[in-house]
Image (cartoon, rainbow, N blue to C red; front, top):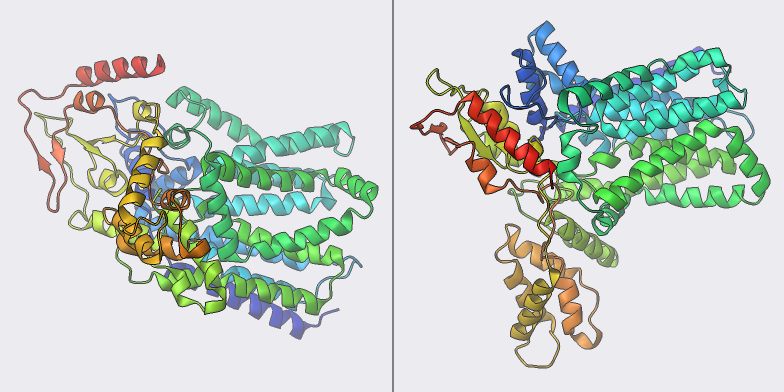
Length: 613
């Protein structure tokens, strides 16, 4: 049994790791422009208008995704007088520390196949891997609800996996409470709610839960109330952002997004040990299936995590932000690795080696961050240029995937988010009020509505991309025919083939791709990365089909969350009269002020027209 000195050393190590998480998280703190969408909703609620984007006479639209996060910031402002931008990071880092503590408790509770606990070196090294992971640290802030959501998900997974106390009301209550927090924070959490309810019902039917213990599901009633309130107040079952962002499945984007996540975080090592674990378990398939049936909550936990990953990979196509929707997989992946190593009966030395390899492999994320440091917004730098020659082909492939994603506004780096926000906010630091008694409804149409929506505090803001606008979010996406694009690329091939050999040599290919990328904000650096990432050319040349396939990387027919656009007549009908430039906003005086009745008639007409499509 460990003595007092051993426990003191363990506590000291945990304290150091916890402080490291807070310090690094604070050093990497940043705001997304989208965070200020929620902040504007909170500001309107604080001023008595409710959680709305544009106050009455406009209809309420749910353009935020974190209901509980908005309530938390609203309460902080109301009770303590601290506005959302000042409170967000403090709350987020606190939830990040909660997430870290839950993982630490789970790691120290893990047992090996023989029933003994792991040596402290294993959980401490595993926690060090988590505490120094770039994505885990990056998403401890941002101003979004991410840290709160991930803390709830990780706690739910740990509770579901540790089902040895499932016969108790306390266990079910904890599972339901964490699921409810997740669902109130993000719509993804509804998966956790459904799984929790299903597991409880099945376990009750199997008589492994007594009927009276189902009272532990009580926290889920909060979710039912919230969904009902959403339907009553906003008129929808899901947030408006869902309709704005999701059009048709986009697996070719999602698979690249997931592949880059696995590569940057070394998570492929977790997948590798999962394969070994599954192979070992399937040597006795009946016993394995019996264990799965016996541990139904753990099966449900794994199914939910895989379903969420599959949804973002195969349907949504990833996310606009870098790995925001997968960041919780970092601590869960480390936890799973240690658990599976225990089932495989690996020695402490072997597990330490596996964790050290995972830690080294996750350094790709830090290498990428170092590569793009001090880079101007919308720039691009190839990581392959910074690694030794033997591994350059692998990194060339990675760079090419990053280009493909980046030009489609997927996996946009947090540093770029911070640079973008700084550019938007320059000269517009303090919120302004433009409404007057003569013209109470100033209107501004914007495509980036976060910071400027917060800045234009009493201005009606039309979100031209639809996140906060019901009509725009349901405006059909204009289909793009890829054939004209391919004909253009074929014509570019003919122009670049100066020697009429029927193929492009390295110089001709470079010139063609640089020409193709010259009009794009990422410029020649992006084109060079595409060329460098191209597969070897047979005979030293790339034929027409190969060029068209390669250049498709730079030709964009879809953009994440930027596919829907406001109809001109819809925006014009609100008679925008506010423009935002480098200095103070300019308000153009209307000959006839916009009235509340005019706004109602305009919205009624367009909502009916849009619903009839």
